[in-house]
Structures are given as C-alpha cells and as structure tokens.
View 1 (cartoon, rainbow, N blue to C red):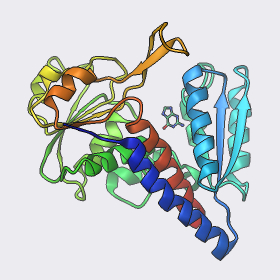
View 2 (view 1 turned 180 degrees about the vertical axis):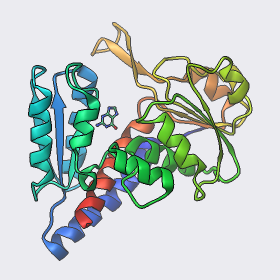
View 3 (view 1 turned 90 degrees about the vertical axis):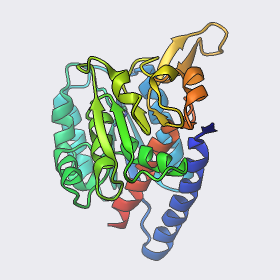
Amino acid sequence: MNIIDGKQLAANLRAEIAAGVKALKEEKGITPGLAVILVGNNPASVSYVTAKEKACTEAGMYSREIRLPETTTEEELVKLVKDLNVDPAIHGILVQLPVPKHIRDKAVIDAIAPEKDVDGFTPINVGKMLIGEKCFLPCTPHGIIKLIEFSGMDIKGKHAVVVGRSNIVGKPVAVLLARKETNATVTLCHTGTPDIARFTKEADIVVVAAGRPNTVTGDMLKPGAVVIDVGVNRIPDDTKPKGFRLVGDADFDSCAKVAGAITPVPGGVGPMTITMLLWNTLKSANG
Ligand code: GUN
C-alpha cells in the first residue's frame, strides 16, 4: 500500500511555479499578484487563507490579504471584487467560501472577471471546462487528477467513482476524469444514491468529497483501488494542542488495508489545492 504524498508532489510543482515566477519577473517585469478575500472568521477558512497567502509569498508572488468583518454587505463585497477586476497588480481573485449567509455566493462569484477567476468558479470557466475549452481549472479537482497520476495509476479506461456532487469538487472532478485526456469511466454518487458501496466496490479510483467522516470504509473498496480523500473534518480531541484532530471522509485505517494507494488527511489533497491555485495565478499573469 502506497500513501500518496501530496506534500511531496506539491513541493515538486511549487519549485516549478517559483521558477516560472522568477522568469516572468526577469523577462517582463511582471510579479503575479493574488488577492485573497476572507469575510468573517470561520476558523477553517482562516486557516485555509493563511496557508494560501503563505504559499503565494513563498513562490515569489505578490499576495494581497483582505480580511473583512462578518457584517460586510453583499454590495460592499461585490464592489471590492469589481475594483480588483481592474487592478493591474492583481492577476487572480479568490473569495474564500463559504461567505456569511446574508451574502449570496452567486452574486460574488458572478462579479469576478473570468480572466482573474483563478478558482475556476465563474459560470464562464465552469462552462469552458465542460466543453473542453482553455480555461482556469478548479484547483481541488485539478490537484486530484495530478495526485492520481502521481500514485502511478494510468487513469485511461479505469472506473472512477466520485462520492459527492458539490460544485467545488464532486461535479467538476467527475467532468475532468471523463475528459478524453484522462478517459476514465465515471460514476457520480451522492446523498440520493441508495447503496454507495455497490459502486465503490467496482471502482479502480474512489474520490470521496462528501463532507462526512467514514463515508467510505475498507469493506466498500475493491482491493488495490486508489483512494483520494478530499474531506477535512475537525474531530474534538483534548489530547491535541488545538483541541481537535483532522480526519478525512474515508476511514483511513480500514481503507489502507484494502487500497493500493490512499491520500492522507492532512497532507494529501490540501497542499495540492493551494498548488493549483498558484499555478492558475502564474498562468493568469503570463496572459
Ligand atoms: N472553500 C473551500 N474550498 C475552496 C476553494 O478551493 N476556493 C475557495 N475560494 N473557497 C473554498
């Protein structure tokens, strides 16, 4: 059994990205700039945006951190995004989701200029991805494809089962896996699927992004399957300094006994999401 080291793959790619940033500065005098907006102080979101900003700076990019109070209005946030759309120092705009309930995700995402949408969340980029046009691919799904390839599996012709149909992960990863380049056969399971195990037992690749611990356990897997665990769940644990530990959506111990390869949580998908964000920001700055 192989533990797929997301940190290692991320480090390899970030070295390439840093070299690309250096070259762009030297050749064209352009420093890629990423604006990261966080509204409110949801603890998980604070930790994600801090990691994104740090990675951005480490790659030699310009990171503009914008922290706004929970009471920010939709109009204020949309106005800020529109200002960033025309700011020449900014090549990528990321609004950390979820935003507070009084703000509509859709209003904010629709305000982002597609050419600065390094999350790949705008309808234009989602649509282009679906029909196979050049676009910003969403970071977590793109990172997942890289992780499966890094595990040594040739995706072509394999059966991939995706568990979860979110707009951020489940739906787009199903689309990417089914593209001609990757050529997997894809089954998309969700909360309306009566017997998920029936499908995962047939899968060569299982991507679990359900937002719930123990969604996939070892008895639900075919021996040798590659398991990509997208879950990040905080479980209260007094023995840990922060008072919690992180677990994924797959039960790691039982899955590791059956799988051929599996991503750990933390240290699997998370570092790759951030890496693909840097990738898109560099791509945007390159024009
Ligand atoms: N919330 C959870 N994942 C993501 C992500 O990839 N981008 C943004 N903006 N918000 C998120």
